Length: 161
Image (cartoon, rainbow, N blue to C red):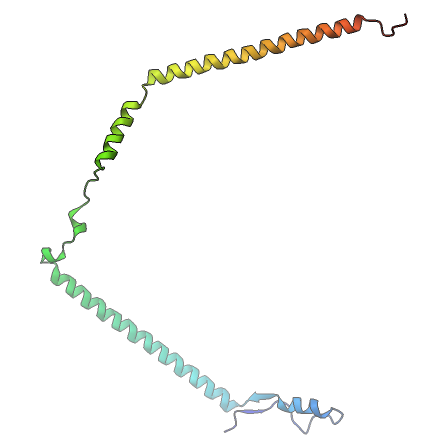
C-alpha cells in the first residue's frame, strides 16, 4: 500500500527546469487519504488505550484507599498498637546544668533601672560639657581672628606713606 504520492505531477513540470530541480520537485511527497485515515485511527486507538489506563489506575487507587481505610479501622479499637511516642505529648525542655548556672550568673549581673538611668544622665552631662567646651574654643578663636583682622585694617596699605 502506498502511503504517499508525489505533490507535483511529473508531466506538468516545465521542461526548462534543470534535472536537479525536477528531482527535488518529484521528491516532494504528500500523504494519501488512506494514510491520513490510518493515522487518525491509530491516534484514536492510542487515546482510547490511554484513557482506559487512567481509568484502571484510578480504580486500583480507589481499591488501595479502601484497603488502607479498612486496616486503619481495624486498628482503631487497639489503642496500644496505634500509640506512638508522638502521642505522649511534648516533653519539657531542660537546660544542661552548666547553662542553667550561666543563666543565673547573667541574671545577677544585670543592672537595675536606676543604675541605667544614672549612667545615661551622666553621659548626657558629659556630652553637654564637651559641646560647651567646643563652643567656647570656637568663640575664643573667633575673637582672636576678629582682633587680627581689625589690627590688619588699621595698618597702612603701603609702607611708604
